[in-house]
Image (tube, rainbow over all chains, first blue to last red):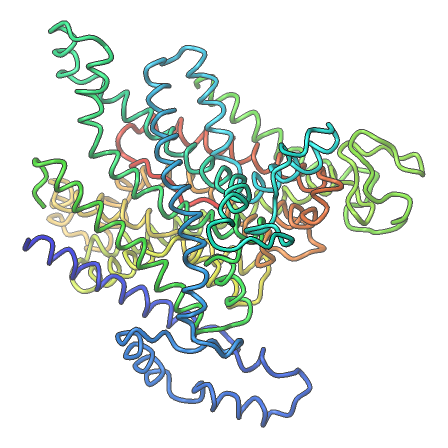
Length: 326
Length: 281
């Protein structure tokens, strides 16, 4: 319990550091939102008035203090550009990204560990060689290129081949624009639209995890207690599941945490290509428009997710591995 | 040299030679836009109306994709190498100073590094790249500014380990100034893993550079980079997919070469460089 409290405080301090860093970065950059919001030929007085309205003319220490105080009250401020509460904008975008991210993360993890274990079990045979080649190549590919290649295959490629209509997966948007379904009836359409983005994001992550899992399982397979279990006459399946996987649990927890930033980063590109109005798109638009409150709000969420995942993996490690006393 | 190292090394050498030689000797000008109507969107392995052969086809302005791709390779490779080298140097400097002097400096450096590691690197890159004017210099600076943390931690740990050893004490006992002990004795012994980690970062830096260029925050057209070439083919993906696919293949081959080579070098230094999953584009 004491450990949990200490870990929680460390995580909060880290989030505060991240936020201060972002704040400093944003304000150290030349130019501000007022320059972008007013027309280039408008008189300087217009920009000055806008600066006053947005509070940009106050000292930086004041802006920082006010922003932090509001954050503690759960108020993320108002978007400079759209003049609506940041919290609402992020609340609209977050579920889309969580849907994309959580399913991809789950698939990344399951597929990655399965492929890595299969490779380790078939070490140096052609299955392993083939999968090593495949995972290394996918790991080297940028997610936006894979996404574009998938779109090309399912639109240009399949229409060239005159494939049946049901095989042509929709490549853009969350749902079909023509569909008038509401409530749960949207689900089949949403699922069809989700196949390509989730597959691309999961493929990139799984390739990295598989490379890592293969080495981890091979290291474990060489250990003394696996040899002992074998010598006792246990079958290879029992050794694999009861002994190997039980001991592989701590590294797997670390893997899950390691996969997270990749999924977050990948989702920025994937959302952009497949035109999903999620966090990545909101963040990109806000950065381009110098919309400070939105950028800060999105960073709070990104940093919060990563820091929380780090802390949770530490706590989980603590729980699954009694040898670990931090 | 293992077989993997030979293959990966050979691949990179061919790519570098291609990037240097092809744009210099090619008959097609990679930047000039002349006969747009007759030469635009020619498919791979075909000739345009004027009878000129295009190995990988042409883009929407009738520019030869293969020559452009190789010209882009110059920039992408240079940015990747320079960006991660500068990041490595900053990391060594910060890590060495933090590990040698400890105290407040160490705590501050590690706090900043922790905070920066808590933001996914891509988000950090986006923040920095969007705030300053996009361009080649900005990309290099931003790659260096967001890539030093891993190397700094490695070097710091090595320096802390080495400063208590007998030969470091001995050097101080014969009257060397502390800075001299750090620079001449401790650092040369601590630098190996940092060099490997920096090398491993090159492929990743190239991926991130092209990611920024793809989003319009990196190298700006007309100067070609693999990322902005893919972006240029993005809205043609349904009608002329080769425009976006071709530069991606060059990018993948380069990153593949860097990854395989880096992995092989890491295996030689077994155990000294922790393997982590890099934050990719």
